[in-house]
Image (cartoon, rainbow, N blue to C red; front, side):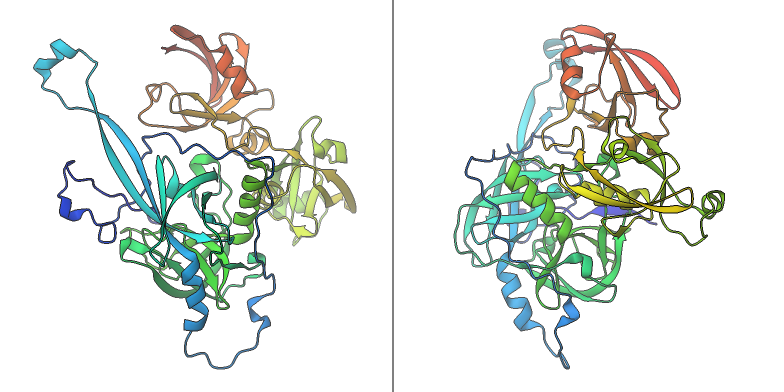
Length: 494
């Protein structure tokens, strides 16, 4: 497939730290990928107030082809209002690192080497979606930032507050204190078609706001960009040129409506080769509404494990070979699926009339629905069609708060989807390691996708109980499951 690169805010060298001051103009900087490890903590998310209201979005769900048009020789009239709503996002974070020291001085300092601080700056793009200053951007643009600033096309600059972020979709919401701002209209990204004309608007490579044109090359792409956070990928693929610094910018249709948030590219050379990806605006808007209204991301939970419906399975179940769906292999006890009457070997055809052809389809669609939503499942059981109704629960441990068990070690409750993907037996339960910071002092003890079963002989099923089971200043006995075997290890926690 070739190397993939996350299109990030641009990393900026700082005067006095190995770079000349002449390189410091934000508009002329050479941009690097912001997939560099984040060395500082995240900007504290704003807590929702008691008088939180729903974001004032302008939505036009009609398909782009609904308007008739003759020969088009310019898109300037469409592009101009969009440009006013696309902003540059500047992030600053404090980087701490140990000073390199002459080995002879270690006799005085030992292993306690002094640290020095420097600033690391990044740049990306964002899209104003409400007149009172809510801005959609990418999580990787603002991740780890200590300070955020937004520069509007009219040269006004504002400090921004992080409302919330969702690494699993690479979406973040920031807010500036302003009124009567220009904003984009949101389209219905589900109605996009391959071949629709689209435009990417952002600030690539720090050269200033730029508009590029292409088409929708594909829909529903899942290319592994968010695998390290067990993310939800449903990307729009486009050949409109997207480069470093475009992240968080707008992908709009030929009527100037927002259809996606530019997020990533696949490229062997870090530059655009016509394979770019954007988060569909329907997905981004659902994340935004949840973060603004509740301060966290609440995802629906059905409680099933499924397998794709192959030709062999269809034949074994007495179905037509062209039947598209997923076969239920696991029904979690006391889950919405069990309460609705789903059984093993049932074939799920659709959820709320939306076709389901893979685990990814089912997982993505259910995750976009709020807990408490009633869904209609069309299934086949014993060769006969049936209809069941389920009321979704909340997906466990899926808030925007941290799931850090130890410094640099992120965990989450082992879900049915993860159990299916990792081939973990039903008798195993615990916390799965979802990400490891390579700078963590525990990076050599844990492995991604390892399942933590017990800490000091206490079973762990959530982050809170796992933290309580840890003994500070002592050696901890931890039982883990990895690659088909249960192992014991000891970890010293300062």
